[in-house]
Image (cartoon, rainbow, N blue to C red; front, side, top):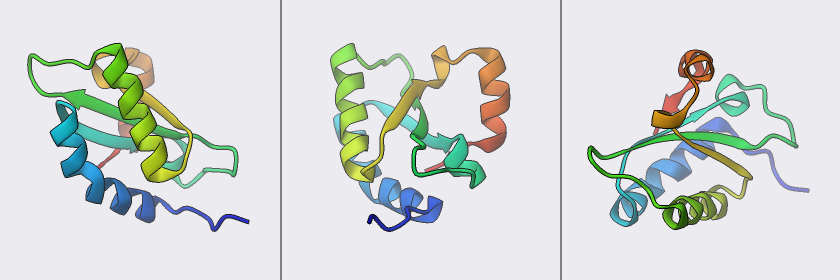
Amino acid sequence: MKSPITMDSILQTLHNSLPALKSKYPLQTLGVYGSYSRGEETTNSDLDIVYETLPNTYLTLHNFLSLQQDLNQITQLKIDLVNKKYMNDVVWLTAQKDVVYV
């Protein structure tokens, strides 16, 4: 049985991986929101991650999928990845209350 993954361990893992991710992708910010950030995760929860790219940059579909896969491998969790720029305003109003930036 897998040991429980805590929000602290997720943040530490992402923090340690952030320099490598930023060297590979034009990331400005990376944050965790949703059930993990609220402490409401279950064994079936995915990890909700919001990101912003550097000004005047974007992720191609290939890079988006590659980042999602990298985050999956880093955290060993199913990743739900979304660009803040394209997040529905109503969803963001709720998510921003929970988001914990790496």
